[in-house]
Amino acid sequence: METLVWVVHVITAVVLIGLVLMQHGKGADMGAAFGTGSAGSLFGSSGSANFLSRSTAVAATLFFITSLALTYIYAHPAQQQGVMDKVKPVATQAAPAAPSPADDSKSREIPK
Image (cartoon, rainbow, N blue to C red; front, side, top):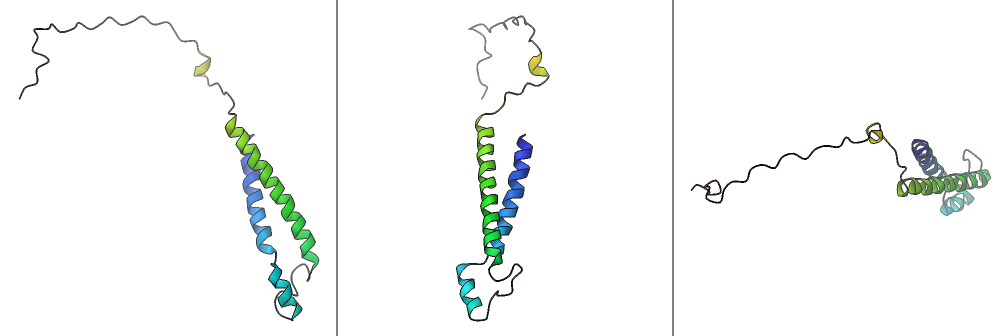
């Protein structure tokens, strides 16, 4: 499920970037009015405004939904059990204690 959300999120981000770059700014209308600029664009002089703005709104909404879904997925991780998690541990015996050196031993002295 997480992989699917990631794929949709990345594709939506790329589509959103493309849609924003395809739209013309407010200053492009002024240039078209005086005979320069993008009067003969791909969708016509004003036909692209409605289509591109609606597509951008849909892509942005989908991007925000996938962002929230990824946040929820990482905030509430599923408890996945592996093969070794299902195995019950075997009771082990404590290892015998190592003999402690005597107080008169010279093992604690550091040679110079």
